[in-house]
Length: 394
Ligand SMILES: Cc1cc2nc3c(=O)[nH]c(=O)nc-3n(C[C@H](O)[C@H](O)[C@H](O)COP(=O)(O)OP(=O)(O)OC[C@H]3O[C@@H](n4cnc5c(N)ncnc54)[C@H](O)[C@@H]3O)c2cc1C
Image 1 (cartoon, protein in one colour):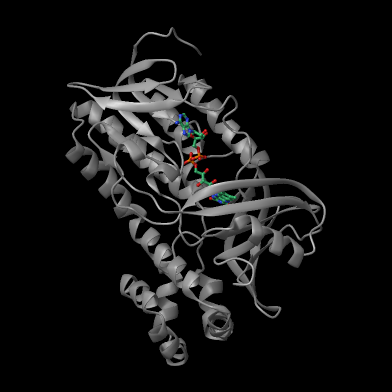
Image 2: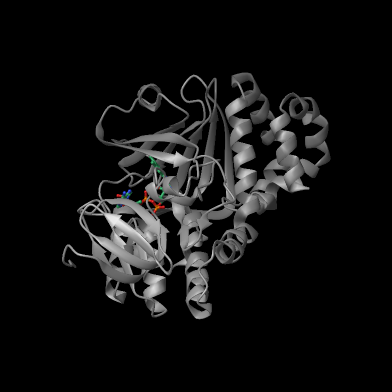
């Protein structure tokens, strides 16, 4: 959908037609609020930049067609240095989704509901006016009541709001290799990546093998592919992933959602479920803003930032502390960790209450388990970041 080069008006303008921008556009249009979406790419869902692993909680947020789900995983194999491993079989299921189909699906439902997309158009900047926000792209100016930054980790909207972001590098390859469809592998080995590496099966013959690290992800991925003897590479995907939870995600007439709001889990780099939750809470807030005709920064802080924090903020903070601890560990710490989580009592807690999204549900009982505390006290005291995490759990 195109318009002339001059200025135009809209109730809400969203920058970024990724999953979070499209989901928000869909929810707002469904509530009768007209939306324009600015997207710099010609085809928003390409190229793929994701391992596609999501918790089953996604189904509580959005109904997705079955053909988007490639497989269901109920086994996580945690691999440690020296070929040691811990196998976790939980009650929880995780899905591997076809991310290209998923993003395309969200784009189509938003467009079907009436959202107008301006593709191959780069958002440049915005200026607050008396009763609107003027949005400047490479091709036009749009006067809008509300601006949403859904423009990913390197968000320009966020930068224009003077909010900083911390991020890490995610680099993966799709490789031809045989792998069980219900198993994901997480590798913790500082000789490969300073954070972790993964193998997520896409089909029985193709897997997504990737690394998450602060820098030098190209080198880390090369080491990882060598380690798992992956030779037949189909293609590569690279992207930046937020690594810190920030409480501020709005301003006067403006909100951020998804990676732009740093709504990803720092511990895993997963940002789909938590970002879509941001779109859901953001849509309620924007609908209320129009009903009350109030677009102040105070209104958005109270109805968006604080509402989001109440829903999932503590979990994202826990994930951040966990990620910091994991990054601080050396290989000998990782081996001590392996020993701790191999304990039958701990395994039982993980089996029964393990949850990809809600760490509090299983981390708290683990820290309270007497045998864990006895054996891990020195380990915990050696890593003050863990004390921060425990403080958040209690
Ligand atoms: C290698 C890798 C693996 C990952 N694996 C997982 C996983 O297994 N599970 C999971 O949950 N998450 C994963 N993630 C994270 C996940 O991909 C993101 O959290 C998710 O894409 C965030 O969606 P979004 O809509 O916020 O942003 P994005 O998907 O980044 O979309 C932002 C959109 O904004 C557009 N845009 C940017 N700037 C402008 C501009 N100036 N003007 C106009 N348009 C603009 C972009 O072109 C893009 O289309 C992974 C990420 C990487 C890099």
